[in-house]
Amino acid sequence: MGVRGRERVTGSCHCGAVQFAIQTDFPELTTCDCSMCSRKNALMVKVHESDFELLSGDAALSEYQFHTFTARHFFCSTCGIYPFHRKRITPDFVGVNVYCLNGFDPAGIPVRATVGKGMD
View 1 (tube, rainbow, N blue to C red):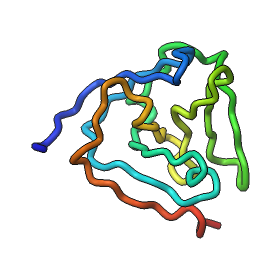
View 2 (view 1 turned 135 degrees about the horizontal axis):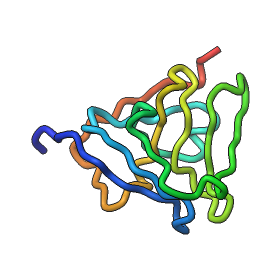
View 3 (view 1 turned 90 degrees about the vertical axis):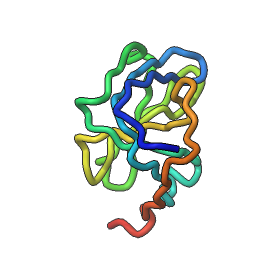
């Protein structure tokens, strides 16, 4: 795969109640081993909040917080899918579940494992 350019990609939860768009060049994707991320098994791309747009479904979102109550994990209250979260260490960034992106193929993008279990 060649160098990806910056692109606008749309995504949604399973039922379509939550719709969003991001701008990114997909420099890397990440996994996390914290108790939350390991259970939801998401593959994420990190985007700045200015590159994230919630198109619809704000009322359909449920929020879950745990441990330090800094990270904000969002789920569709209808279908239960996790489309994105506000990050703990960098709260002005959004971690987007790439499996919720429309027509997106993550092949060829480097994946970095992040350590969440060991965070204070």
